[in-house]
Amino acid sequence: MILIIDANILIAELLRQRGRELLRNPQLIIYASERVVDETNYEIQKRISRMITTGKLTQEAGTDLMQAASQSLGTCMITVPQIEYGYLEIEAKERIPRDPDDWHTVALAIHLDAAIWTQDNDFLGCGCPCWTTDTLISHLKRIS
Image (cartoon, rainbow, N blue to C red):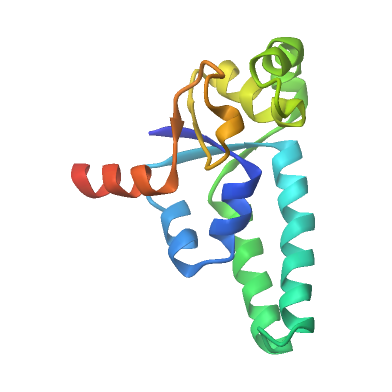
C-alpha cells in the first residue's frame, strides 16, 4: 500500500514505539514531501526538548528517543523533493482551502496517485483517499 504521510501523523508516530514499528511495516510504502520531513525534524527536536525540560523524559531517554525517531525518519519513508510535485501547487491549494500550507502533501498524493495517512480533517474532501491510523492498523491486521 502506497501512502503519503502528513506531518502531524509522522511526528506523533515517530515519538511512539508502536508508531515506529508501524512505519516499518513491510506492507507500507510511505512517501513524504521534503517540507513534511523538514517540519518533522524541527517539531521532533522541539517536543523532545520540552519533554526533557518538563521532566517527562530524562536527558538520556530524550537522546535515545531522538536517535530512534531520526533513524526511523531516515529509513522508513521516501522523501520527495518539491521539484517533483511542485507543478501541482495551485491545484493542491484549491483542494485544501482550510489549510493551504498542507498543499505539499496533497500535491504529492495527486502526483503519485496515492492515499494520504492523516488525522487532520482538513484533508477530507481533497479528492484523495485518506487513512487514519486506526483504520490503517485495522486494515493491516485484516490482510495479514
